[in-house]
Length: 202
Length: 298
Image 1 (cartoon, rainbow over the protein chains, first blue to last red):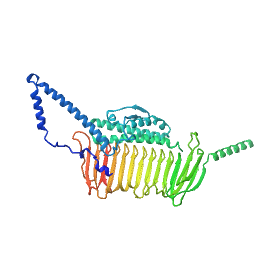
Image 2: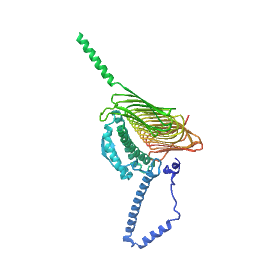
Image 3: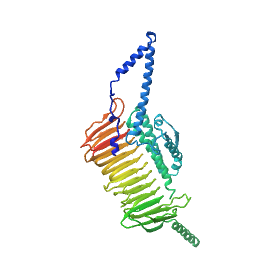
Image 4: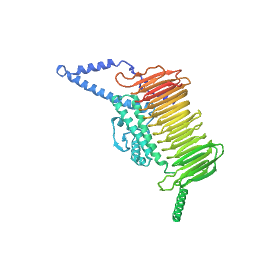
């Protein structure tokens, strides 16, 4: 718990702006003037501007990608409840479980892909999903219905969170809850797997 | 007429003998055990009732249905193992009702499938797991690790601090007079807890509702989150607490007269921040669409 107090728990705790250590504008202005001075006059005057515009657009795109990467990194590494992702906890692609308990197959989304990282985890999760149907079949009907319903609740939560993140990609709260949900899904799959082994040794 | 009488008598005898063969068999055994040893109990179906006592021995009383082959009890090197054995490849799960008394300082490990589990008077660490069976336990200072899939959980504490780690998939969880550190998770179950003095609380659910009423120790940390479940927290703390409540689309209400602020001018999202007392502790509540209510403990 003491570690939590040292962690950044909200984006609001981060500074809104960081001032550079020195005034950068004089050097930027000098470089711009040098580019303009090197360019041919009137007929080609638009070309450097176009090149600069394209360059700025590339820079803007790169900045956006960097922002998304930082957001994902914050969601996975810094926010509470998103402990370092391990083979057991790392979220990955979603498999939907329908209300009747049948697997609807892999359905990777952009948000899922952003969180995929650990191949060991992916292998483990795939193995758990492969054995899920057999484990569900071995359960009493009432338990099976409850587990199926819970897995469906997780699927819905993931879908809702991903939909909300689609509208607000930088939302740290949604990112944290999505990571939690991935972890919870893995916990349920592991618990169901372990529960099917409980009676075997008896 | 006489033949009919004889036939009826024979039928009655047949039914009676069938009933006897299907009836419960009793099992009793007592073995010596260490006061702070380990007791392992496993049972697929039926019930496991464990009680702590002052004697340095383990006593087992079982009522076994036909589908149960036997009960194995062994005690060696401070570890007592009680195992309900089912016939191999029978496909039938007979029930065994076990009543077990163990030294109260024992470490207890119970594994069940559909069997209900109930413990009382056990002061050592308890590791309890069941699939669909309900689990109830009495808590003293010993730590608890409890896991169920669909079984409900009922925990009764005595205000003695311990580390409590509980997880269910769809089972509901009720905790009375918990203390110490609580870490709990459920997907769709409801979690209701009253805490006497908590140092650390970390709980979360996907769609289940979470309700807490409790006192937090000085500098305690309380973190709860749900996706769509509602969160209702009534807390008081030595030294007060700072709180931060965030919800993407749920309603945030409180009894402090503080107004939740929108996090975005155009989109959804609201946050409630403030401090009670000195703000020594931390309360963080988060939901996506669940409603949140935070109040002082009455």
